[in-house]
Amino acid sequence: TGSETIGRIAGWEGIFVGLSAVYGSIAQVWNELYGKVVLPLGPAQ
Image 1 (cartoon, helix red, strand yellow):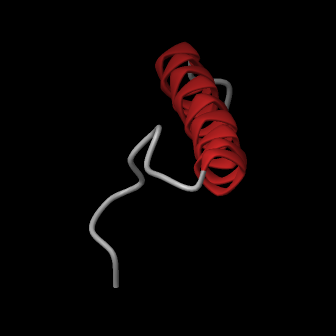
Image 2: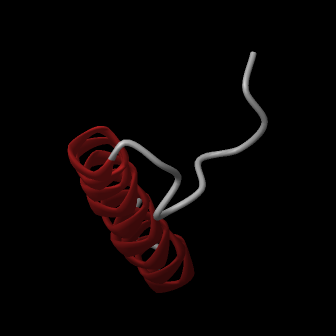
């Protein structure tokens, strides 16, 4: 408990996950708003 390395890794992972969530939500809104792919989210399923 209290490993600084684990804390740093978790911090960077949190930043990455947060930015991914922001990108995904903006992409969904913009793609729907403009009726075309503005920001890709991956292959259509």
